[in-house]
Image 1 (cartoon, rainbow, N blue to C red):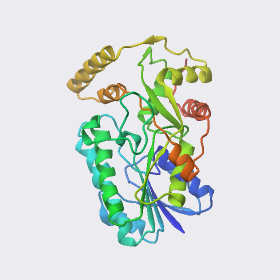
Image 2: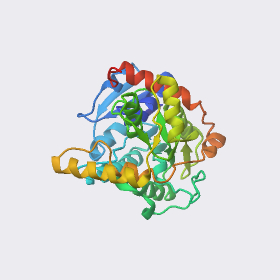
Image 3: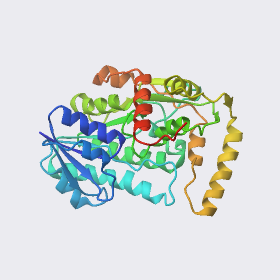
Image 4: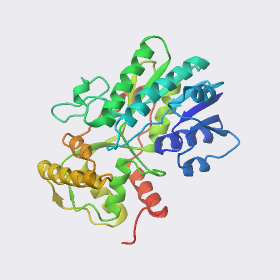
Length: 333
């Protein structure tokens, strides 16, 4: 059996492909010609083949998926700021539909589509939300979330029409090989570099990226078509996360809590200056908007129905710290 993995040059995609390679399965990795290949080079083996293509090149997708029994669509444009927001919709909505259509055209048995908890609803009282929590397009904050929400709705339509597609919604993965890094990985890098003098009163559901990869493969094995599964673990406040990073790294956690209004004003000013200079802001304003409500989620469906593991988050944060340090992301203390 051969599986196609999109997004293997990235964070979650790398770990998904690595787990397939570890199992000895034949893997085909869809890679853009312009992507960094650091992660893919580590996957080079007799069971992993690299094919070049693009989410918006339907012909390349059909060629890549030909002969594949499973398609794991992990690739996404994960940015909280983009000079041209249209890029996010082209990759996350149009690109995802192209992958689904290519999988159907070649007769792939099943597709596992990687969405995000950002496309789900949240509760008014801050309690953990689940896959069935009410949500609508108006709840989406920023172009990244909106693009992923729209993509998920389109994928659900295809599943309702009979295509075998399982949807997974990872929460906030952390761990090694976060090469860009992701916005969450950037929080860890900023902390380790002493660039976080204060924190906001918010929270995230944190999960080991290796558990997310396990959850994606388990969804392919045990998931129900058209059903969504939150791939998460521990609900932690940002203060909890920073305190844990402090214990791991030996750096002092920030003690000052910044009110939402002050954070919004400061980052809004930074974004105005960045726009005037024609550069990307260090702290996207959408990140502050998202932090207004804790992103707490209940992953019990994935645990009970798929058998997703729940590795202690501190282990994943430890690996992240060690990997960022050993790969030159952290300057001298």
